[in-house]
Image 1 (cartoon, rainbow, N blue to C red):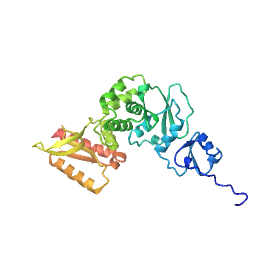
Image 2: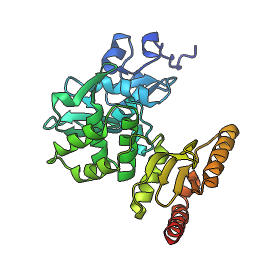
Image 3: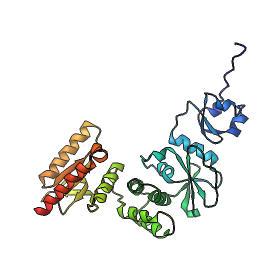
Image 4: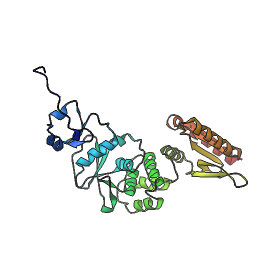
Length: 300
């Protein structure tokens, strides 16, 4: 070895696969200065991980558990993710950590720390991590996120059977003094447990925000003899207008959807299909199509 070369520090197996604290590193002979080397990635204060470990939310949660302490807990989008909710908000890449009101802690890089008032019944334990209960998670997301993304989270929690319309509405009614409760009221009105995907939630909120009534979710279309024809994402039965979101990725599923929609059209329904492009790039054009279809129904 060249006399000026710096030996590569040994990587203990115990530190190779999951996050660890500075204290754990020192136990295995790794100093704080060595942790600034290329083998390690700094997650947040006093917590590192080996660079071979992917930077995923599950890894961040494991890291968060190392610093939560006795009074800390996971909340918001991180809690929703733990319960299986797909999140799109860019803040979902942060670990949302809750602290009891008055328990001020320094904000750590990679974390979003919330100081909130919770009761014992608001907290559960999942994978050895303290976490807000499903209904409290729904309530907090309903207050903290945009209206649309709040409905995405609350719909998903309800669809998974973790909350109900009644339990969520009752929780909102019983926490009137907390900030953001007015938006939570609106989310409670929009909550639809039958919604099957985040994009369906987004399309439904788009319709309501444009001024349409809240459509009927998962509406069953039948023929004149009462036979099943198909199930629609959303329907306005009085106007016989159906709105669907096309998230099909496979040719076979798309063909099946086309046949189902054609069958519903044969029963006199107007079927409009929104794509991802319609929602994110041309929402006004799509809403105009819905308005035209609804107008024709009223004129008929």
